[in-house]
Amino acid sequence: MGGLRSYVLRRLGFAALMLVGVSMILFAVMRVAPGGPEAVLVGGEFSAEAAAQIRQRLGLDRPLALQYATWAAAAVRGDLGRSFKTGDPVATLIADRLGPTLQLTGGALLFAVVVAVPLGVLAAVRRGTAWDTLGSAVSLFGVSFPSFWLGIMLILLFSEALPWLPPSGLAEYGREGDVLSRVRHAVLPTLTLGLIQMAAVMRFTRSSLLEALRQDYVRTARAKGLADGRVVWRHALRNALIPVVTVIGLSLPTLVGGAVLTETVFAWPGIGRLAVGAVFERDYPVIMGVNLVVAVVVVTANLLTDLAYTVIDPRISYQ
Amino acid sequence: MLGALAVGVMLVAGVLAPAVAPYSYSTQALTQRLQPPGRAHWLGTDGFGRDVLSRVIWGSRVSLEIGFLATALSLVVGSALGGAAGYFGGTTDHAIMRVADAFLSVPALFLVLIVVALFGASLLNTALVIALVTWAPAARVVRGECLALRTREFVQAAHALGAGHVRILGRHLLLNALPVIVVQASLLLGQTILIESGLSYLGLGAQPPLPSWGNMVVEGRQFLASAWWIAAFPGLAIFVTVLGFNLFGDGLRDVFDPALRGTS
View (cartoon, one colour):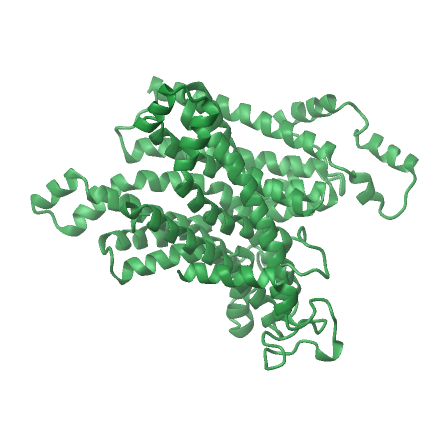
């Protein structure tokens, strides 16, 4: 257990280093970019003095290093500053939006795994049959769909042509607490994001199960007369799951990226849309905050993925 | 081969857009607004009475230009770094691959969105940023190939003959890794076109009236209930093109490496 603890500590150290690096680069990139928030905040024509005044009020006239140090010192304490545009605390803005995004991405991932793993198993076990072809088609289509278009086509089909599901929002106005309404609104966005995520998971399940089925222990298990299903699900799949877990971990950044588009299509009040709005309005504190939170979530999920290996395969241990 | 066909059709359409597009992409004909697909307009007309087919054909230019440019940049960087990592090994390998890992764990679209929004959505800017977020997987693949190649006899022979690092890496390793790189190129093209279309969906691509597949889908969104064809066809074009490149890449892989057929 001591080995595991020092491994986790080392990983956390590396993660912290990465967060500092990413935030520094982003900070610099935003300040180097032409144009600033004053142009958006004032709008139309404005004098150089007015711009300078705004920059001073926002603290943008101070040296870059000092600005970053101030931001970082506050961020460590959980204070992400205030939005240039609305003046609201960034932490509150993000906290309000994080729930819907986690619901969307979590639901999509769950959908992807629940559908893709069995499909991948079928494709591997019934290799060369219609199941295999179906599996390949699904994974090929999944990586080729533009998510925003898939979303719009689902709206066309299930909201316009067949009036079954609502096309946008988290719930009907004022009924955010109503579970049924929430679920009905979640179906299309979750499906959009999930279908695209499914492809990679299914591809990896198939190829890594094919690999596992060739191993000696599978032949042994078969030879001692175990039922086929038991061999596949208990012996082979368990070993095949390691690359699958890796792929789930690796696909998290794509999942977040996909969420940006999906949230835009479905008017989903998550941090993806918050970020898109902030980028267009040059709301620096919000951009920084969203990125920091996303980076923390991704890094944490990656660490959890690595730790999940030890549960699936006790032979793996971290020194 | 279906992939090659799809890719071929899109390329020809893009290159010959002025000749094959039946109408101008920007001429408005308000009396012809929102016409469903028919004989005069095969894919219908949009909210300004513009021919959807012509706009889809013209739109392929932007997507393909950015796709090719970004892929080329990404492959150059990915092959150089991946090749160096695989060839030199040790500390060089370790350092390069950690940087690649860091890039792999950043939400790509997010990063691209920020940079393009702040620095402007020019062709070169967009291609550069897309390359920046897509070189890492290419580097990984090339590295793996070079790791396997560097212990081969012909590489040792080149060493013995006194060939320099650059010559060995360029002539012997990367040239032999070319099949893998070509396959990556095809798959990357699909990916970069998807990223570009996502950007133009968010309003960070070609600016109106110049059509791009992404901004056509956005324009079609508002007419979804009455004129589904405006959003449907440009998206279908993206899908077919990306699918084409993916199929083509898979096909190439089978040709170059028959042992891998059907395993990935």
